[in-house]
Length: 113
Length: 113
Image 1: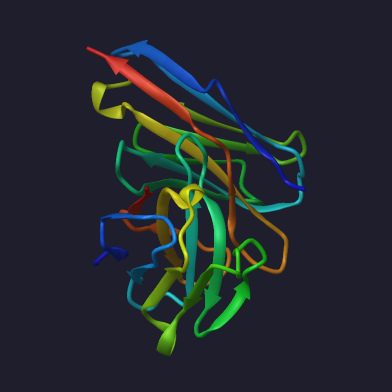
Image 2: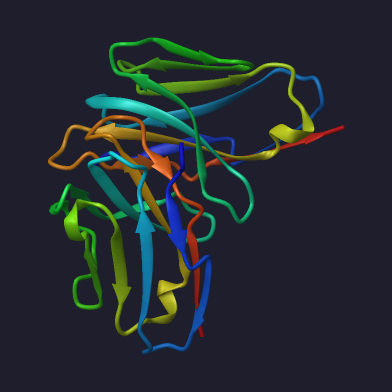
């Protein structure tokens, strides 16, 4: 069974530039999550999707971050404009539904200069 | 607000030792608890999921226990090996609108040969 796929793996940008990350969850998984992990910290939820719909985006900085999950499968997370403090690893995870075991992708390491 | 704490932050042991990693959470109204392993520069690998109705879960040399009433979980690793060196993260599912995980900062384990 294929795992959660993410791309790119690494990205370096200047502050105020924009960037986009892509995630393909495990086939059949209805729930998709984007987490942000700052060095030395545990991951923190940015947004949760259930199929096409947003379940929780309370911690997403909506003035600069946006995310979508078209057709209930792939998802993209965008940052525009990026700030220095956005430097982190962005992790995508999926689960069959709700409280089931979550499976994580390899992450995208973003460096903002 | 749910907070997850992991002690110790770092641990070094010689190969072959049995060891225990600790996780505590402030709100006992959790749904499930999940333990992960994270290797440097990599995503999270799920180790064990304990449902709130369970007291423990085992996988190979790993055994995780859950005591909801005291807000604690432990991860027991038997006969440690150098390949076990990684950061171990504990996360809880909380009973809120979303089903995202709330993570601790992790325990970084180093097993020397």
